[in-house]
Amino acid sequence: MSAKGTSITLNGRTYRWPGRPVVVVCVDGCEPDYVTRAVEAGAAPWLGEVVATGTSRLVDAVVPTFTNPNNLSIVTGVPPAVHGICGNYFYDREAGAEVMMNDPKYLRCDTLLAAFSRAGASVAVVTAKDKLRRLLGHEMTGICFSSEKADQTTKGEHGIEDVLRLVGLPLPDVYSAALSEFVFAAGVKLMESVRPDLMYLSTTDYVQHKHAPGTPEANAFYRMMDGYLARLAALGATVALTADHGMNAKTDGAGSPQIVYLQDHLDAWLGAGQARVILPITDPYVVHHGALGSFATVYVPAGSDVPGIGKRLGALRGIEAVLERGEACRRFELPPDRMGDLVVVSERHTVVGTAAARHDLSGLDAPLRSHGGLSEQRVPLLVNRRTSLAPDARLRNFDAFDVALNRLQ
Image 1 (cartoon, rainbow, N blue to C red):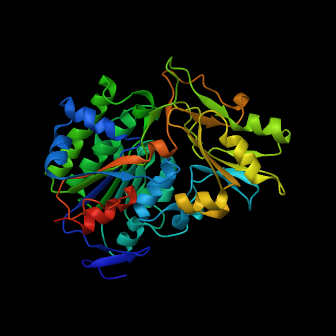
Image 2 (tube, one colour; image 1 turned 90 degrees about the vertical axis):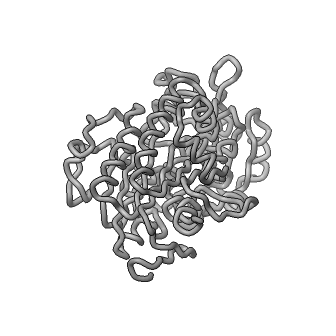
């Protein structure tokens, strides 16, 4: 690693030292059409200017298109096969238990945030939900806190105290657009006061789970976001915006959820409890999606006819792809030791569940919208400066720091 002011090399890439503050924003659930529709409606003038005069590309997110794998890919610059975080939730074979992937012990490489902070950069991270904070802030020196627990910040643990007073907003509810607004408001206050060299802001997809692109509620959210991003840019920051995944309606024409309950099918074919279905979307915040997404991994008993089971699953209505572990890990760049025997991806308007009896949909107060599959892989990458990117280059959301640090004209 080189000294402060030159560059750092991490996970096979070299990153230039920022000549001005760099802010990378992960807008959770930002289907590209949200930006397009908000700009067309005049709700996001700053984003419209970026599209017209800066850099605007469509890029690929990591599959499974969930929060943890993609946020960690963005801050490491590599796919889950390298950093190890392949879901919000997984089956830990060593522990023999299904667990959340929030513990940094599951992270297999360093983050850019930690590496730059060790080299002497001032680094700040604000995330909406506390589930990501420990992963994003692992071995990082600097400021790292969540909107969700902004009332509990201490200098020792978070690098800052009394965040509510700094930001000037009340503690937001975890199920609200205000949770994301707090992230942006905090980012602006930190840029005004601390002026970090690098800042990472990560929101929640509460609005996107409930409201389609172009709706008044969605446009209001992007209007709010646009105002804060404009302020960050006015403070001299290079702002790069991308997303962890897109978002789609998972319903039929009448608005009823379209769900394939994999565990129920497998229990009928193999016997109750013989197979194990893991839904990596699972996290502590299931009210808005009922733990239903478009990606699952399946463990079957030793000696099972894996290809045959895969073929039967693939024949179910609403299933887009069923891949055996090796093929899935090669195609999606996933860690084989943390995946099941089969990977199941559902179609654009369908989700997969375990057993019908295990999913509580009573909290849904709007037609089901979710993510996880190939249909949510395309996301925006916007930078408020022109870049030297080849027009036909395939880009990933985890190229965001490389673009913002290395590719500016």
